[in-house]
Each structure stands twice: as structure tokens, then as C-alpha cells.
Amino acid sequence: MSNQPVISVLTCERTAGDYVAATLQQINRQGGEPCERLLFVDGLPDVAERVRRRLSDVAALGAWDVISLGGKRGSTEATRRVFVDVAKRGRDLIFFEDDLLLCRHAVTRMLELVIPASVSLVSFFDMKEVSPGAATGLYRRPPTGRDGRGLWGNQCFRLPAEVLRWLIAQDWSSTSHGSSLMASDVVLGELLARHPTRPRIAYHIPCLVEHVGHGSACFPGLELARWRRATNFQGAEFDARQLPPMP
Image (cartoon, rainbow, N blue to C red; front, side, top):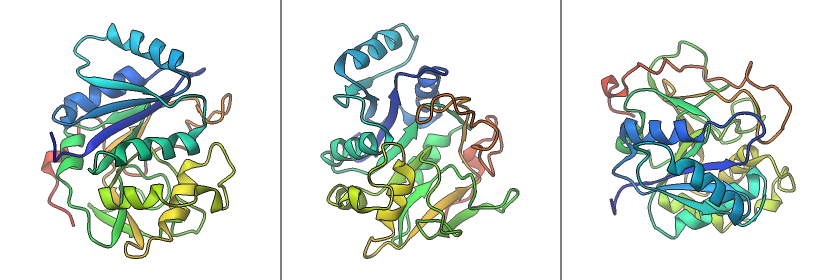
């Protein structure tokens, strides 16, 4: 376990759907069990305790540590605090949102991936950067996107340990969305655009996860299901073990 990436899932109390147990079970089944697995709850300790009690009734869930982030922070500050906690462990981070569908052996593939030296983040979900039907590969992009509109979607990605340490030393409030409670993806992209030696992020195609949440925890009441979907997800039965090594 000591050399494996840390797996984290970020959740909160939801008003529209509760997907977290299913997401955790999928991570276990699709290759995550050898790793340290952390469920971070954006909320006070009593909220984390309610989540812990609900999950205790889920059969075969496995060893997930449930960690309160100490209050309702919003996605930007919650993500930063996840990074701070995981960086203490000195290992890569594989980050998940809590409402995902994974293909077969998705996590095994994420663990085996070698991140190129010029890449600061590898995303396993894409909603706008790579055209549907694109060939298998790692598609490198500027951290703010080929359209300059930002990194859209923190659904699932891997960060090298040294990039994680660099990120937590940065001033997150200095970005264009630094004051926003709910812009963790755009803020992350702007920060990574400043990295001195890793000027690109990369998108793993095909996507290994699909977003399945029908309501937004960041924007309650806003229906996002119609457009917040992966460009190149091949379905839950697709087996990531058949993919060639990348890059």
C-alpha cells in the first residue's frame, strides 16, 4: 500500500440524489482495494458521522476512512483541503467526485498509468476537450483548455505527488475564480497553467468514468445531466485492461 496512490472521494450532504455508496463500491471492485481510500465530507463532523452510519449498512464496502472537512466549505476550498490532507502522505492522488459510473478495471488502469514528465494532471473524464469517437490516447491540452474557457470537470483525475505539494503552496485566491465557492475545476486549471515544468494536462481517451448525477451539489436545483457527460465513455462493461500502454 505504501507506494500506491491515495484514492479520495469528495462528497457532501446532497439534496438531489445520494450516489456515494455506489461510487465507493465501484472503486473497490474496479481495482481500488490495494490503496488507502479516503472519503472526505464537505461538512461539520456530525454530517460526516451521518455519512459514516449510512455507509456502515452497505455490505462489502471495505476500509474507507471518513474525514470531515470541518464545515461546509464549497467545492473550491473543500478540494484544496483534500489536497492538503493527502499531500502529507507523499504519494500521488487519484481524486473522484461522488456520483460516477466506472468501466471495468478503471482504477487498475489509473494506478498503472505513467504520467509524462510534462503533464501535471491526467483526467479520466472529459466533457469538451476531445471530440467524440477520438482514437485511444493521452490528449495533451493547456490547463485552461484548448478553448481558453477553463478546466471543466473535476470528476476524476490523477495528480503526481510533487504537483500536489506545489499546488497547496499556491495562492488559490489569486485566480480569476478564487473567491468563488464553487469553481474548483477552473481554479485548479488556472493554477496548473502556472506550473514551471509541467505546462500541460492530459485527457485519457477513452474516458474511464461517466458522470451520472442528475442534480448538482454545487448548484442545487440546476439540471446539468443533459450536458455534463463524457465525450468518450464506452460503457460500464468496457474493460480498460484491453487498452495499450500510454503514452
